[in-house]
Image 1 (cartoon, rainbow, N blue to C red):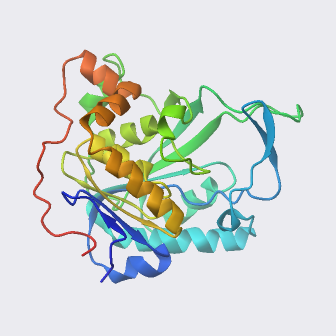
Image 2 (cartoon, rainbow, N blue to C red):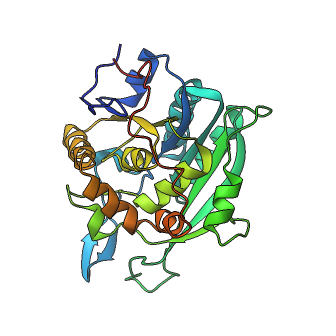
Length: 293
């Protein structure tokens, strides 16, 4: 049985502190959707430009560069574990760059997932290329795959079309990286923007669904899930980031904070403009059995 590090008062947000590779085997709960931001294996002494300053891009020991064999073995194992925790109709989203995303795609195929799309996230505010020897990196990729080849998956097509001015939404999403308003409790070195996670969750889940993140960091996935009326469970190895996740979730107990966050997120602003708020959570959810007890 997995013990929660933190559990929200209405049981819609749970975090376990520990190693995903060890904890995932300890519970049998099945999730509607998984989002994973695994290591990109980029921490090899490189530099970048942030706020006009040259900084090292190393994230931590967990992101140290590995051999191709080691990367493939790592991705194969966590994707195997996650597949077992998905409902048969569930889908998984995985973010990456060229450093890891091709390995992820190959592992997904070998494990029997069906790849649905590869989203290109085009950043509107990428860091400058200080070497001036190649094009500026301005994109990341997010693979969307379903668990089973022949089982139907959830896709809120009409909602995505509505958010795209009545036209089919493409697989290129133009969004900024995280803003100052997303760092009220601190900043994770690989933090994803709430706008990105909000769209992913709105696209592939229904109200009350359970969303899981095996490398949850500061729990952007969980914050977006709760803002969308979904429930969340995550695993994070760092106690410091678990505490940051808890602080971020506790901020949501304030309706003013929730409103402020939604007012910064492009898809929520579009929904509000169209007077369609059906995607939001009801005040009380029947949580039933929980992933962590």
